[in-house]
Image 1 (cartoon, helix red, strand yellow):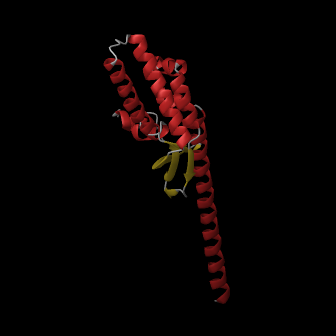
Image 2 (cartoon, helix red, strand yellow):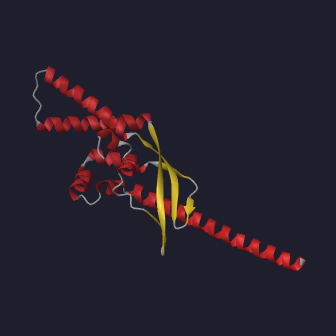
Image 3 (cartoon, one colour):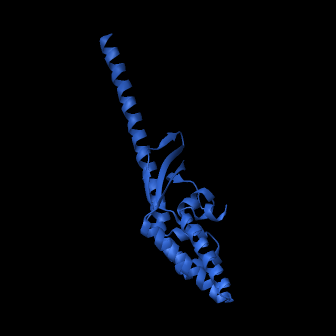
Length: 194
C-alpha cells in the first residue's frame, strides 16, 4: 500500500512538474513575442503610423518635423509585465514611457497663433509659404522644448496574443488608435484624431 501511494505521489509530482514547465515555456515565448513586436514597431515607428497610406508615408519621410517626431518615438521605453495566459490566448500589460508629443503639438499651436497675431498686428500679410515656414519653425521649437524638458508621458496598454501552430502571435495593432496614440506620444489624442 505504501508503494502504491508513493508511486501515485511520484506520478502526481511528475505531472505537476511537466505542467509548470509548459507554463514557464509559454510565458517565456509570450514575452519574447511581445518584445520582438515592440522592437520591430519602434525601429520604424512611422511605418505603423502611415500604414498603407503611401501619400502620408511620403509626406512623413520628406518632413523634418516628422523625422524629429520619429526619433523621439524611437526613444520610447517600455516595461513588460508577466503574461496572463488562458488557453490559447495571452495578455501582457506594457507600460510605455515616451515624450509627450501631444503636449508639444498644443504648445506649437499656441506659439503659431501668437506669431500669426504678431504678423497681423504689424500689418504684414503672410502668404502660404510664410505660414508653412512659421508652422514648421513653431513645430521644431515646441518639439525641441519638449525634448529638452524631458517631459514624459506614462501610458499602460494591454497587448493580446494568440497561440498559432507557429507559436505565439501578437494581434494586429496597426489600426488600433489607442496603440497608435501611444506610439506617437499622445499626438493623436491632442489633435482629436481617432
